Length: 314
Image (tube, rainbow, N blue to C red; front, side, top):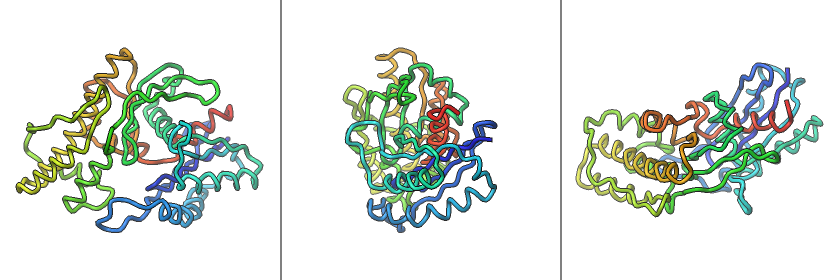
C-alpha cells in the first residue's frame, strides 16, 4: 500500500486527505473555521490562527486508522491559483506543515494551487480523471472564486489553466452567503439557503437578467434585487430561490458563450457552490456536465492528494 497526503488550508476550511494509490480510495478529514454569528467571513489573520489550532487535531483523526509507514509523498496547496502573484496568507499554514512533514519523514513535497485541487477533486469523485488527457472547460465556483478556465494537459504541472471568464464583482458564493445572512441564516449559508429554496412554490421569477460583458458576469445586481424583495415583504423561500436562479442564469450564459467560443468540449463544475442540487440538476441536464460529488465540492484536500500521487508517479 502506498499513501499520499494532501493538505489544504483555505480561507474557511482546514482539510487533510490520504489517497491510497492501490485501492484509489480517499480518507479525508475537514473542519470549518469558526465564524461568529452574523459575520460574513474571516480576516486572514484569524484564518491563519484557526488553521494552526485545527491542523494537529485533524492529523490525529486522519491517522487513527493507521498507515503512517506507507506514506510516500506529501502535497500542499501553496496558493489560490496558478498565476503569478497569487497569494493568501492562510495557505502558508498548510505549506509549512507540509515542509515540516517532508523533512521529518524524508518524503517528497509537491505544491499545487487550491484551484487545481478543486478541479482534481471533481475529476476524481466523478470518475473522470481520464479528462486530464484532453482539453476541457472547468468552472470553479465558490465564495472566493467564480471563474471559467480552459484546462489543457501539461507535462510539467499535470494540467494548465487559462482564464476564460470570471465575475467582475461578487463571487457566486459571496452572493449566496450575503443573501443568506440577510435572511438570518448562519455563515456559510449555502446548504441552508438551498433547503429554504426548496420550500418555494414559484417556478417563474421576474427580473433576472445578470449583467454580462462577453462571457464575464456581474452578480452584485442579484444582491440588490434580493434586498429589494425582502424590503417588499417577499417570502424568504422565494428570495432564496430567486438568489439561486440568479446564479444559475449567470453561469448558464457564461457556459453557453464559452462553448460557442471553444467548441463542444467537456464541462466540469467544481467548488462549494456547485454542491447545490438545484444547480447540479440544471447543468447536468443542459450540458451533461461533470460535477464533484458533494463531499468533494466544498474546500478539501482530496484533489491535492490525487495530484500528489500523479506527480510522484505512484
